[in-house]
Image 1: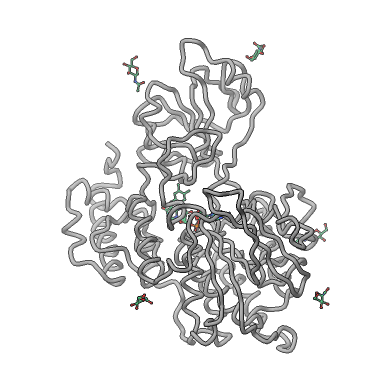
Image 2: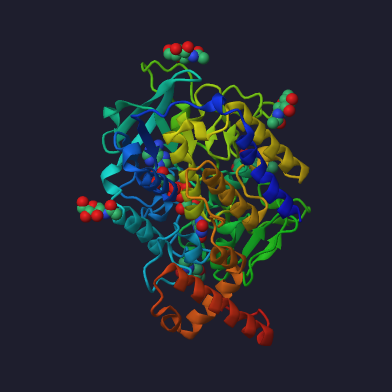
Length: 532
Ligand SMILES: Cc1cc2nc3c(=O)[nH]c(=O)nc-3n(C[C@H](O)[C@H](O)[C@H](O)COP(=O)(O)OP(=O)(O)OC[C@H]3O[C@@H](n4cnc5c(N)ncnc54)[C@H](O)[C@@H]3O)c2cc1C
Ligand SMILES: *[C@@H]1O[C@H](CO)[C@@H](O)[C@H](O)[C@H]1NC(C)=O
Ligand SMILES: *[C@@H]1O[C@H](CO)[C@@H](O)[C@H](O)[C@H]1NC(C)=O
Ligand SMILES: *[C@@H]1O[C@H](CO)[C@@H](O)[C@H](O)[C@H]1NC(C)=O
Ligand SMILES: *[C@@H]1O[C@H](CO)[C@@H](O)[C@H](O)[C@H]1NC(C)=O
Ligand SMILES: *[C@@H]1O[C@H](CO)[C@@H](O)[C@H](O)[C@H]1NC(C)=O
């Protein structure tokens, strides 16, 4: 019921614009545009492809450039194989044993499946290859400048008109940066790159007090996590129970003495060989002390699976001598600055605001279509969501009158935040998380696309954007996961995947696996020991 209410509410801000005064926001579409995209992960590739999908007569004079600092596309799915060397940040948090936690057909760009034979829960190499194939298949490569980093971006202009000034450099010649101008900036820089590491009282002294007979004590964020074997002969505390914490618990727990420190109400993953502890309170020279007063004296390593910060450093540093006099994004932990009062686009490291639908900046410093983000929502299937956002952005850039007025968008945002508060979630803490789970994530995407249909930008039909089979498979994701583990144990992958090519066939195989597993669990219960 709550989710239904939310689904309805999330439509409100969008549909209310149907009744706006059309004179208010109609701006003649600009004939020529220049657009810079930052990042060639799932989000950047989605917006690039979607811009190119616009009718030829709309975009033929547009200049579109995508800057990617790494040597290839694919974002975090392109592994950084250099051994971690803290505090230098790796280019990707991906680790060798990483497999997706959702079946790949649910993670696709609509209409672009994984190749035949791809295991249902693929390793990161398959994920990376999928993005490479997507870029090649759609001729995106000619628009992508690999090994190019955007160092700074600032808005030279005011709330109605202006241009972005970008400082861009090749990654091997950082000192030779060039200044380029663009009308629009689309940020798809990912949000799994800047660790969020809590600090506890006493941790520095604890680190400095390693007993001589023990391994050197360490506290490392999960972005540096690679091989579980590294932890053999160490006693480990994993902090956090998100996707990274669960994987570390399963992988490290079977090799060495492992604790997992979790918030009240969280549980370790099925099959993890860990002892649960509450959150950490502080450190003494000899021990890690938990909030229930218990202490561990034998700990050598902490793995902080404590998540990431939402940052875009290049928006904080504007190019000097470019006519820009203030940063596009400010970093402020100050809770008195909110979406209504912010004079600038702001991040408190959890939430970037004020943004319309997690996409367009409502900063008073520039027009709403000047700056857009792709990929901010969390707890969502990224590629389909990126595509829905990309449709919204492309049509709004082609015809800004698609968007409600800035005031209406701000009202919609305030409504969204109030709605979250009423449900007990502080919007400035939960940020871009789809706290209502899959149904909220899907309602979000459906609403974006439905709005474009209502505006006559996409062919009108009654269908939801998120296909029924995708909804089913997301719901049954864990069940399908247990089925797939059994298939692997039985070595029957080929039997299930032979001849599976199209989206419909992938949907069908997931349904059959779910049915097969339900029957098995009715007879045997759920406890198939997949991690033995
Ligand atoms: C360990 C891990 C496991 C995950 N597993 C799953 C999963 O199983 N299923 C799922 O749906 N999601 C998963 N996710 C979520 C994942 O973040 C998304 O699936 C998605 O691929 C992210 O894509 P993105 O394009 O938003 O960001 P990224 O993949 O991070 O891409 C951003 C790109 O921008 C580039 N960039 C950044 N700054 C600049 C700059 N200044 N100049 C030039 N280039 C720049 C980066 O180099 C990078 O290539 C996982 C995330 C993590 C961290
Ligand atoms: C990509 O480019 C090639 C060669 O220019 C062309 O033959 C092909 O049709 C293009 N594919 C798409 C999807 O545009
Ligand atoms: C913005 O700048 C343009 C061009 O310099 C100017 O014509 C316009 O009046 C300015 N608008 C505002 C709101 O300051
Ligand atoms: C704790 O360790 C620090 C750093 O090694 C040391 O300076 C300090 O004296 C120690 N405190 C106690 C109470 O042993
Ligand atoms: C763990 O300790 C044992 C016994 O001291 C030793 O033989 C082994 O090499 C150690 N393994 C690792 C990975 O450090
Ligand atoms: C922001 O703060 C102001 C003043 O404290 C308050 O009136 C307003 O309702 C707040 N807006 C949001 C979106 O929370």
